[in-house]
Length: 435
Image (cartoon, rainbow, N blue to C red; front, side, top):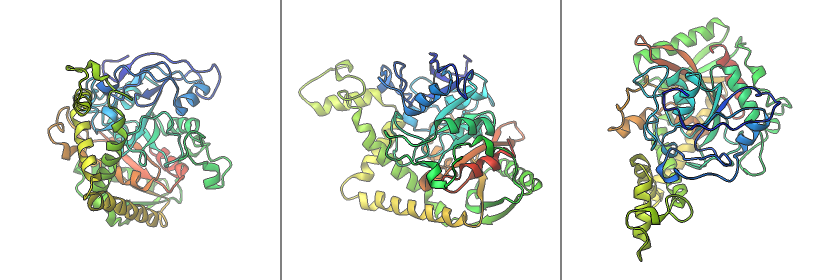
């Protein structure tokens, strides 16, 4: 393993001898359950937790012949954009040393970028696959909500998150997606793409990576370019020029709801996190109260508080507090209900824009990678960096991030392509024309 701190646990999990991924390694983000191998979620709270079962995606990897070389580092409970909030230390960016690899799946992206794993799995709640893909110069896919089972994924925000692949090329990412996608009796939110699309070959995503964009229409949401870094915009338009040269056409579209998407996303995500993380109380999950400094006493609330104070990092505490506040009596209608209304508006805007375009395109991230430590003292800066990725999760649509060149200082830039629900083949086809 490299010195990028990409892995929390380096323990090989073998797969079957045959299958489409035989002979290849697939690193797995450490919030995806692996039977008998620690799953920490990048948190001191789960430092000793060993799941008794495999996540559905892990079972499918093993059946496909993949070897899992280890569990990758991540922002604690998926909460971050830089992979600096991990209790196991920050991850270095192999594509731009001294800079963050993006988050929260930064360990998975770094492992692929450094060649420490052929492929990797991450999870994407508001851009956590696409952001590190862009910052590390690799490919990342956020599938349609319900395409990939979340059984065995430690929940952050259930209505937003999806497990997705990271790979050096679009074709390899598409092949991995074909292995992990499909309905699962243990996850009632999953859907069968064959039924949703009416296509019996719906899961053959690799065949769509043919680079043929002749006649494809690309919509460019103007809102996702406003305020973006000049060097990022320059690479974005160069990539659009490449698509045009291959026969695609583009036009600008307006998605006015996106001005409220980041606020809506964080209210919803933090509210769901507040609810999900309540289980880490020292009894059901987490550090036993007996291991905290004072141990048990007659005041359960005090013992509960000590467990969470010792087990959670600052970013997780911040989000749990904000989510609890948004759900509290007197504020739920003021914040949470309005955020859900904004979410419906975002989805409607995307659906309307995709009526006149096969895919929508934007920079994946409006800025190049941050220097290490740059955003830790300014959480708002980190939240706003998600402006281009969070709307896709609110709308439950598929998206891909592909490398789109570098800035003058050599920092990677990603291009994001968004498709209609269960339109993974469209974004894979468009993305394969560039990577």
